[in-house]
Image (cartoon, rainbow, N blue to C red):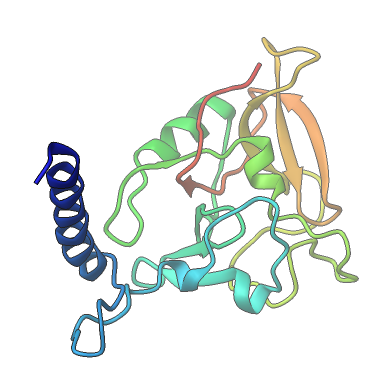
Length: 194
């Protein structure tokens, strides 16, 4: 046999062995006698993507022993029940950092984009959260009922931060020392963009 034929035969054997080894690991049946099932679903086969628009029934899933809510549109995990206390910006950042919900740490004050992702202005109720959401204890309406974000306001970052109002769905700039509610999140970026 010449060297080219031996080389191609060896390559064919390496490819065949690789395919037989890899397909079962990937959950792909190698043939009718294969007993390997499909890979388990991840997030109900809906990967987080900010381009999706899901109804609340498919968008939110209770996690962390029902202390957290997974948002399948963004991949973020929110506190199911935000706290009852108000904080200034510095103390709000610190409080979220030491929060432990459902036996898990790693929480932070959300950015304005993250908190704003929960706004749904198409709803005709006093709350601009998506209809059918699973959240509890969210403060709605009235001055002082906004939620702080980790994002400083671009017009005056040394003074002001963004807040989100779930009664109107609006974003407001406010001084860092004013107290507002906090709603901690897990996952995603935590840095200040300004």
